[in-house]
Image 1 (tube, rainbow, N blue to C red):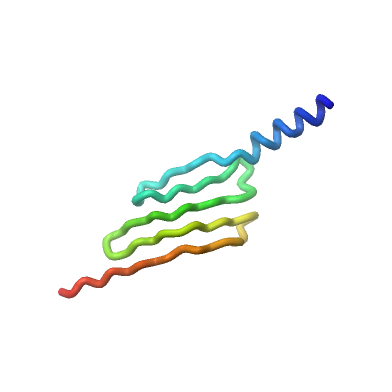
Image 2 (cartoon, rainbow, N blue to C red):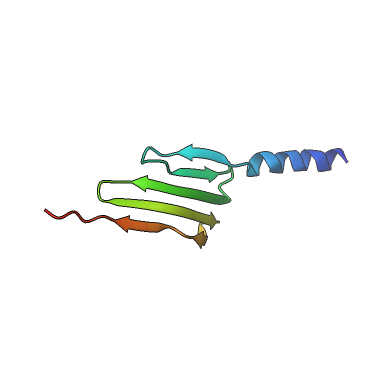
Length: 76
């Protein structure tokens, strides 16, 4: 019983996501210490473009992607 509790505690610690906030307008990436999966929530604002959406990757393979890129063109 003790081994089961210890194994569950170690797995919980290794798979618990850590948020990483980028300085691009609000993008947040969640990933655990083991880098098994990665969830990125985009809210990027650049000069003539915005990028919003979510990307989920497991072992580096994209399994979910609903990002939306909006480009703004201003007349000169």
